[in-house]
Image (cartoon, rainbow, N blue to C red; front, side):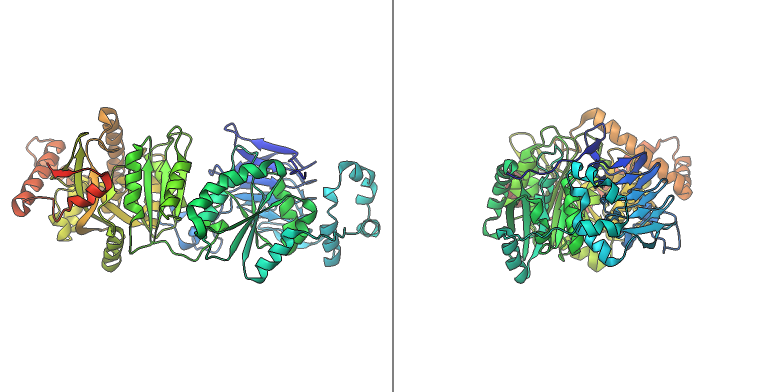
Length: 638
């Protein structure tokens, strides 16, 4: 039974993540990998020689054409920065890279290439090219086109080592002498897989080729399978061909089948065949895309795929980069999770999957829950007919802000709606209605009404309150008063009620990473301080859990953490906006000895009493039946 080849070397970090895989007899004298992404990886083929002080800079995506060199993505990401980064550097076989070379981003270096000392690589290097300079440019090719073609097909680096040792004198001699003795092998292959692929290509199918890394603890193959099933259906002319060895075929099939069953006849096409390197040349003539992992076998596949101009993507790249689609996503609904009540989590997901009149994706970000049931959640989502979802699970707890940033990095929607287990979308068309409101009124950020509820174990009670309490200033679009109410008097907008443009949410969240740990919604105070208007959609938007929810059940320790984050946020605002600090000082100077806390309490009390006096209740047009359908229990007004 054919077996998959194993790498000669794999370098791991302390946490077990593989960062570099190299084939037989390849060497790297010294180097540095610069990346904040856990999935970054260097894939090196056989008989490659890399010198000293090689820098693999996976973070560099700067545009040389832009007027400014400063990374303004911290303020507002540009359209160019929405292009997904390539997280894998691929270096072919028989490559020589001299010392002090810098890789900028996910570069591919073809077989037989030579990279001169000090070169800065910003683009892919063709096979047998000689490149030099900063930025690196092709100075020439080692051989003519026909010679390169023959060397690419002979693939001496795949010979057994004893054969290479016997022919070292010829390999080190003139290339013409080498080609006189060795000719490209001719494989007359009659393979059922090749015939099937030919038929699919004639029908216009796009074929993906993938060798699952079944024996790797990282299991990139699971992510690839999920992404494929999320991207396509039976209506799409796509096929994913899995190349398996005899010993792992059964395990892979057993894992995939339940996911396929949930989609039924709507499942996209997945094919399997037994790995055989001799067949790769023929197979890749009918393949459009190769998906790599961190396994050494990926280098072998890249070698054969390069002859046919097959597109290569890495299994840890963004799924849109691996499996591109034309579908546009309106809203990315980000579900923040940490040790959730799973009954509430599934109720929250139910309120999302039933949404109509807009396109959306679900991104679940779990921040280190032990034994998080990712596969169970995934299976449930597929059973509900939901394909556009991503589940991100961290092995450690990093705090809400980093969890949110991770979800934002995976999001594709034009807008972001964050929500937590126990909070629910009010009814099945509120996302679409909020979207239309924001588009028509040209708001980058907006919020709707909350319907507060409390569950005491026996009943669900609605509570007559709101955050912010002073809604009149939002209806009047008095944004100076809004800024003062939020930033000075602490009449905050509840984070669960807000929805905003992804690019703006990402830019502001990126700024607070490392400064604020849990208060991800403090970014909206920053926006108000910066003069960004926040719209008010005067309709019920969210069922918000009080007392037992994630934001209100944490006790004194949790409140202290959030309080510390708020203090940091307000300190930053006052440093950036002297006029706000001066306004606060002016208010305190005329407060007759009262503290700011006293003034804030009075402001909120007055706002509550004024609203109730005019409107009678914050609960406007509330249909308790909408909540009852989610919690499967009676709901009463408290």
